[in-house]
Length: 295
Image 1 (tube, rainbow, N blue to C red):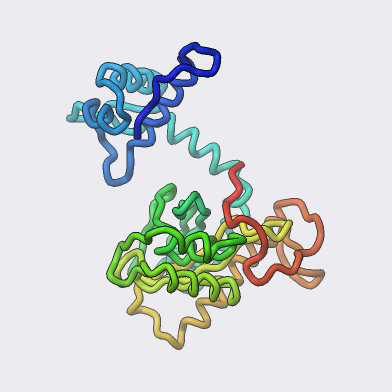
Image 2: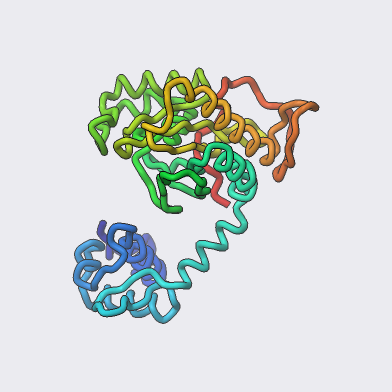
C-alpha cells in the first residue's frame, strides 16, 4: 500500500484530500492479528516517511481514532473509531432485520449464526449471534475471509450474474487442506448453490468446522447478504444436515421478509423495508450483484 504525492488536475497538491487518504490508509493497517503497530511499521506499510506517519498518528490520536497502546511505543484503534462504527451498525437496516431470526436460529441448534456481505473477493462479517452449545466457532464482527472458502461467500458469489465464470478466472488461495482451489470445481459448486438456494462449507476456512449458508434478498429480489450456521463438523451427522439446511434457509427467508420481500399473503413477518411488489423469477438465490447494502 502506498500513497501518491502527485499533483491533481489543477496542478496543485491534493493537500486536504491527501491528508484524509493518509489517515484512512494508516487506520486500515490495524487488524485483529496486529492490533498494535509502531510508527516505523506503519511507515513501511503506507510508503510514507516516519515523520509524516507520526504527524498523521498524532492527529488521529487527538481526535480519538487512535490511542497509544499501554506499555508500548505503538498505537491501536481508539474509542472514537469504535463509536463511529457502532453508528453504522445501529442504523443499518440489514442488521436490524436480521437480529431476531438469527437469535432464533442460534437457539434452535445451539450453534453460532453469522451474517455476511461481499466486498470484492472477500466476505465481511456484519453480525454474529452466539449459540448455547458446548463448542463455539467464533467470528469477529468486521473480520473478512476469502469468499470462496466460506458458505456465505459461495452463496454471494453464486448470486452474481457471472459468479461462476468471474471467480474462476483468478487463482484461489488455500486456508486448509480442504479449501477448494480448483476454479472449475468452485464454478460447479457455485452453479449448484445457485440451483439449490444454499451452499455448504466443510472445513475449507477452518479445519473441522462446517457451515450452511442461504441468501438474504431485499424487496426487489436482489441478494444483499447471506446468513450461515457454523458448527464443529463432528457434532453433525449427514442425516442431520437437511434439518439444518431447512432452518438456515428459513432464517434467511425471515430476514428477507423483514427487508420487505413479498412472499404472498399467507407468510408471516415484520417488514422493515419498502415493498415494491412480488419477486421476479430469478432462481432460489434471487437477483442482483450479491453485495450487501451499505447505508
